[in-house]
Image 1 (cartoon, helix red, strand yellow):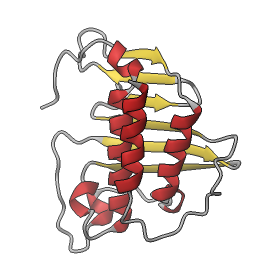
Image 2 (tube, one colour):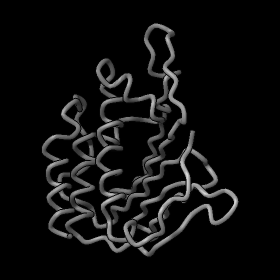
Image 3 (cartoon, rainbow, N blue to C red):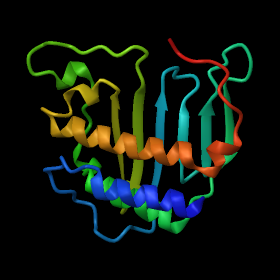
Image 4 (cartoon, rainbow, N blue to C red):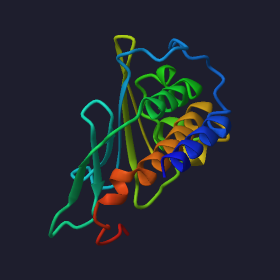
Length: 181
């Protein structure tokens, strides 16, 4: 299983964030303090979380009447942390700034794309003493062709979602009991 996950991560590095035109300012060597918290949610009260610093994986069970989330202790290998860091650099996430990458901020002609249900994202990482936060939502994929910022967010989200759902911790948690409409 570890080899399969590592292979998926390496393939993601080879194909992801090809749209990045702005160079990262992050050092080539992963800093010792590198940690990342990746969150996505439809219901902000029950986010999916992959957090290397808190060693936490949380899964949305889509069960508002029962247990809304389940958690597991996240064990992240040095190789996986390095692969995530390499993807952060490849997508130049440190250069995405404070602007929320949503339809309202990505449209060039006032035509807004709507996605229902809407998944939102927050990526917070620390590297070399600095902390960065990138936010956006699932509408970014609609703007990925025309906006490299949207493409970089979308590529990174795809990478992290694959890492999240293929992790042994995720696979050990209960199945979701419903779906968002």
